[in-house]
Image (cartoon, rainbow, N blue to C red; front, side, top):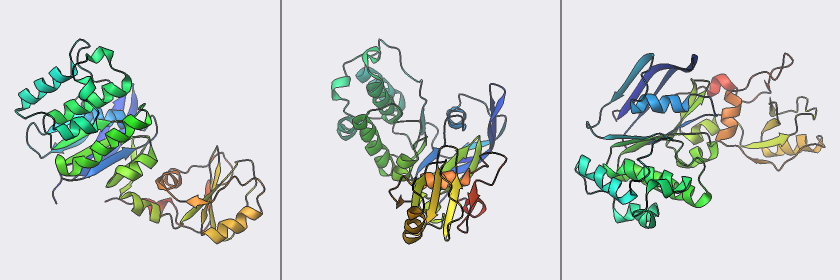
Length: 302
């Protein structure tokens, strides 16, 4: 299937610092792609480039859909405060020649009570939902959203997640940035793991998790001496030490570690990110030891 959006070798600077360094990925029709990384990883700079708000220093962005088929919402985007939500939605629908939002979407986003209110009176959660409504009013083929649920309470976040989940069939595709790896694991068809402006890996969430080579994980405080337990991979981070392996191997290791803070849990996308971005905590031993799959084997693209 041909890509709806193709990003190749994107480079950009922000405040004199390289924010994107050779970022490449695609978005195909019907996909939800989550670009995930912590603050400072380049996510906002990437969305600004995709939205045309920032000119990249190098690389290429190719959108192959219809001319007016891409909609982008940046975190600080907002219509004038005196404008009413319903009026702006109607204006956007008129500009794009669409019928506006379906009653189903209005219900999903809980927009009914907001339609007669002015943007200046909205809470952060209400404003974010109204922003998403404006992006969808033009019936886009591809929606680009920067941290769409950041700062939302559980109810508002779940509503936005349900709308994103429906973008696959109702609109076409979505490209999201976020720092919540658990949310990305729930929502994404594919994830692009970003760190310091560089793509660590990209693939289906469960594929990345499986490539860890371990189904279970155990967290240990960083001050507890772990050593080299058999059949266990040890990842030493500044705030915690993580043990990866089979459940029985972790149970054996945990019995010898009085500081183990358990419980033993299933591995997740967050573990894949931690392993991929592992660096030595100091000039001492390497951060990642053991016989399970290491970062080189995890560095997959799709």
